[in-house]
Image (cartoon, rainbow, N blue to C red; front, side):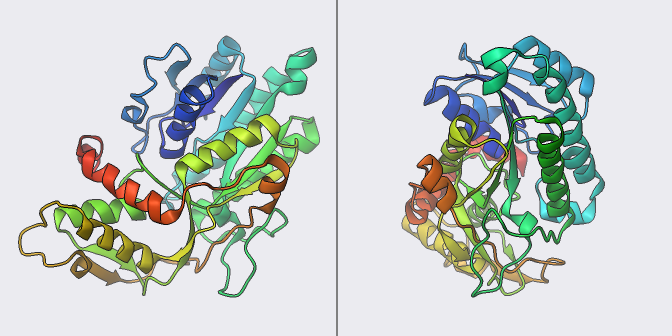
Length: 341
């Protein structure tokens, strides 16, 4: 298959591309605006592959998107282009409205105009996969069942609201125009090549530099953690085998409190033979509780039974192993993250 990936220089997008080329042998065309979190260094493993090509394109630019689609004539489109930082969305929501809503609309229209002209098997097999988040469903209490594909949308931040809106656009383009769409909702991702503003790489890097790391509120918020490589395999499975018009939850079955994740990272770092910053006795001394985020969701959790039963996917990387490997990667790959902080 030939995949058009939007946002392929980002954390999840680059992982999907590496999987598609290195493990699956698919052809990939990557378009990315290269904002602050887009990093082509994450694709050095595949940048010289005959199966890979890149275009610096904003999905809001319909003319450029149209040219790329007409040129590459993809069999599937995965939309991973998104602004995704909740804190940034609180400070400046306009970028989230533009990319996540207007950009998704523009992309849907160009894809629809391409798809309607396809014929025969190529039209029947075409897929548009939109990657969303569990945050569109709001916040869970401690005893509530995890989110599933039938959960109601209750977004609580500008980021999650913009993603919820984009989900509705995708669904409506499927219902109204017949575009063969699918939607996935993932839990918190972690792994190599994640931009340092996210919790896990932020803690690792600040600990290595001897800097205090801020923990919102009391740190008891709960997140389900999914390794990005598991997520990549799930997305390809949905694109290849998912039922048109359906949505699928993708999670890691690893619900952990934020403070426990932070302490786990500190414990892992204590086990590596690397020198501590001067004067630091133990990494947990760097924990700094700060004022909680506005409208901070307490808990996310997802039920992965549908994708497991229908497509045979389930997470394979345990959090303990995945987290240790992630810490090791950041220790060994300062070249990748140093210029980003």
